[in-house]
Amino acid sequence: MSQLVIYFGEKPVYLCDVVSPEIRQVSHHPEAVFIDELSTAAINSLLHEISKPAFHAGIICNADFGKLKKGFFRHFTLVKTGGGLISNESGKILLIFRRGKWDLPKGKLDPGETLEACALREVREETGLSQLESGAELPTTYHTYTEFGKHILKESHWFRMLARGAEPLVPQTEEGITEISWVAKDQLEKYYANMFPTIINLLKNSLDHV
Image (cartoon, rainbow, N blue to C red; front, side):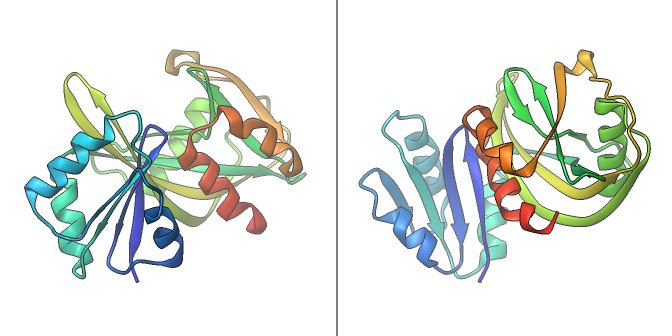
């Protein structure tokens, strides 16, 4: 079974080859849109519906997941980024405050750069941390936005990281970062009300192993 979720703001669109129990529950909502045909017209129709305030979620299901993903992605300009879920030696999690939201450090992949190298570079640049150990790759997240009239699909690759020592935190203000905090895991839920759903899901699915 293959599936991924793409967020349009707060609204999820699920791509899948099998309807899982989670997706079946979502599909029962009266304002959910379910599509089981892979066509440009069907995808365009869904993208149009997303703009409506009542829209709850979208589901596109096709047995050929690779074909489905390719067909959906071609409606966007794909941007790949690398970022980190960083813990320190006390087990606290690093959060940054960027443009009004609590987030995790990440940034765009440079030509010829690996995703892991990108993630480490961006964390260093955005937080001032240098004593970092990179660990396992975490689930990839997807969200969309519009930039200069183009529909952008951001594919964010995440890595576990451990920050050694007690280095000072230096927010990269030119990237809109105004605050950086080490947060105890049992206090993270307080930040969820002002956090993107992709980041909330990443934290909830990864914290048991940090």
